[in-house]
Amino acid sequence: MSTIRVGENETLDSALRRFKRKCARDGIIGDLRKKEHYEKPSVRRKKKAEAARKRNSKG
Image (cartoon, rainbow, N blue to C red; front, side):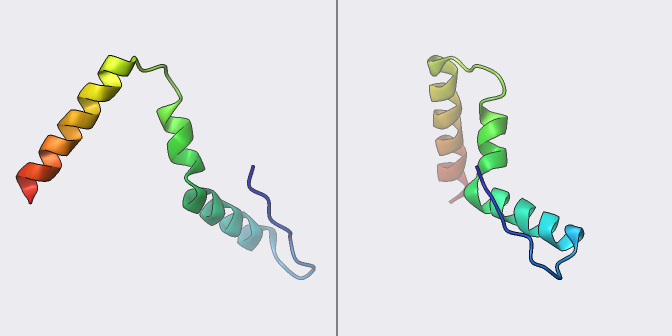
């Protein structure tokens, strides 16, 4: 869980912005999106192989 300390003279908007930035850096949002629905291991492997194929064909 990401936590931040709100400064004495800090506005709520700037604290919220810092919190969102920290969550993005920690990869929390992406992780939640991945785990939103169960994905079978075979489907996960197919997606991984497809992404690798796309990366190799571009470069």
